[in-house]
Image (cartoon, rainbow, N blue to C red; front, side):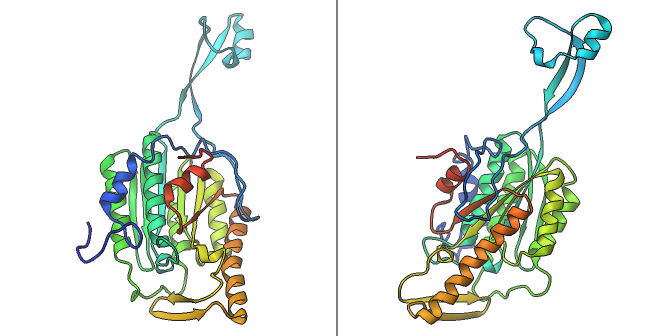
Length: 313
């Protein structure tokens, strides 16, 4: 539900109606159709998803028009008559959409906040999976809680997922404290391991703040038997700081104005921001998880079309 006191403008906050309306914008988009792409960082890893497979259904006599590639040569030679292996397409694959709404996401230097971009990408991914015939669920998390929605092929279930995303998005506030100790990201990935045993699609939308060796291990375990896609959301400041002026940096309840025009401030800050982005991409490459990059300074949908290799208007 939308909180009346909040301005749900799609830049600082988003709402349930906005996320549900993305159903129509997701039409024609597919994870399985994604083409290999070159990331803006050397650490990016691009690969195709496994996509849907085929289940063996039966062995039957050849009929005119059958695909000869499905001939079972052993059965045909043994019986002296042509036999065909019949397959049916796998359907109804479970999809888990993991959406980060931690305080680290509540930041934006141009256009919108990372938290809103992540919310929109999570909703788009959910609609894409639903339109592909998959069951859709997910995990939505902030610094204190994790909302888990079991996969189900139902519009009502996507509404439940989007409502959780919107609720956590609208709960973000500059006064909220950050979590301490073990990173919430690793806790969420560990929860995913308990749910996604085999042949799931996992779409993880986050800035991957706090990612480390444990994150790498969890991603490797998840991707061993599932299709995992990482959508890393970043702020444009991570690529280029402004030449002059001041930038407000926030960490929970602490806010500091930084004079980026001074070289002794600008260079280490720039090195830190770009280095962090590069480190996450390198970690994801080592995990063999396909990486897509999204800037909070641009609209989500055109970026998603571009990253999926489809282009767009």
